[in-house]
Amino acid sequence: MMGNDAVMISPGDDQEKAVPMWLRPIASVKFHGPCDIHLSEKLDFYCRVCMIAVCKGCKKQHDLFEHEMIRVYKVGKDAFFKMKDLKSLWDISDIRPHAINENAVAFVHKRGDGIPRPYDLNSDVRCETCHFRLRSSGAKFCSVECKVEAVMKMNGSGSMKNEAKRKVETISEGSASVETISEGSASNVQSFWKRPRQ
Image 1: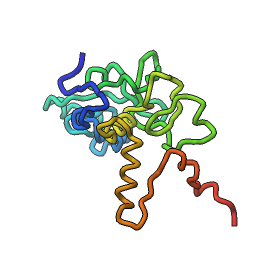
Image 2 (image 1 turned 180 degrees about the vertical axis):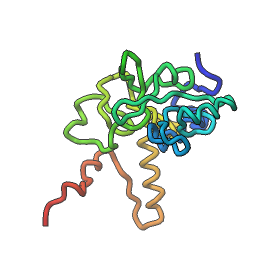
Image 3 (image 1 turned 30 degrees about the vertical axis):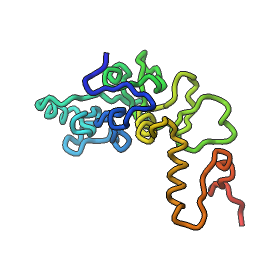
Image 4 (image 1 turned 90 degrees about the vertical axis):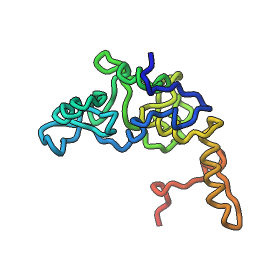
């Protein structure tokens, strides 16, 4: 059963309908830090109305105005939602679930650094956004942030690669030559970390 503002996602859906408004700023929200008002409390909740992280003390004020909250949990440095809390609000079927304390959870923030590594591209299934190894063929994304980012970037055909290629073409159209990035040319990119010593 889906919530009132939840929408099933298909490649042709408009991004405004595909990602609920309250979920869009999730990448910039920092959880489990100290609250600015209640210094002894940690930011363990996400207010869907205000789109901010709140502590237990602030949650009481938000509850007075009947704001909808989602509990955010923490393992190590990683924040996560319980899948059962998100399931009624948004389609999370292609986010890789993790098991923590016998609960299926979805990480909030990206797990990978976004850099595809040539030595391990063929090993397992990768997150479509940050290239984190998923180890699960049914999933496309490692976190809520990755799915939100992918859906927001997706064009009408459902292809994110075409969107990136089109952006490069439009930027360089003003110059004398038009360059596009093809999938094969990605291996020609030189990393600044591995350049030869002088």
